[in-house]
Image (cartoon, rainbow, N blue to C red; front, side, top):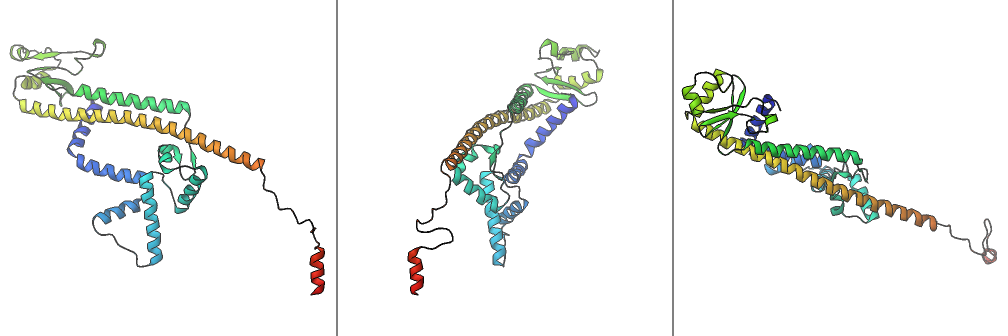
Length: 308
């Protein structure tokens, strides 16, 4: 990760922590949109919360609106993304045919396509690659949170030179000072004695960096350091939550894939059983009466006709 990318991520996490109520509202709207795919439903709910919900004067218009709202409420609860009332009716008939329940289909998650009435199971290699990438990203978030959070040291940057460093307890050291030797780069460790008795840039490379860092090491901005530590602690928790969320997502996705495969097997077995039953017992036309032939009538019917 470059320093510019790192700066962007840290700034984003800090803004996210300060604006979390607005962020939660945006997430809620996004979830509703994702499950219903209907802007009309979102606008209707907002107007309803504001007390501005209106009714149509035309009975047919109101009936259509109510049916559409019911469809979107159904999508919001199930996440099936049904596109019309006809698709909903077909889904009910399909479920009755294969003796399935909504709770069972919901366990399959996005692998069940309600509009197509089928399960779409991805390839094994696709599943493996996708899950591996998610796990790597989750580990990166958790490790990043562990790296950022330090109770006594603040992670800061000299804006003029772009140098990142840790500072606290009247000392400072380079960004990768605590990493293994092969990842440390050019490590340095700055203490109060280096600021008071050494005029040269040593142990850092730039005199400007040393002047800025020494002001912090000598205790001129302890309040700023404490505020930075609090901010990066909150950022570390956000990173850990993201990492834990990804692990939970991988586990839930794996569970849903297993349920989808089970139900696909159930549907295939039920379909093959129904087909074999139809082949074993084909629908036959009713046999004609023994006294009846095609294009003729019986003797009894003939005599009745003559008497009339």
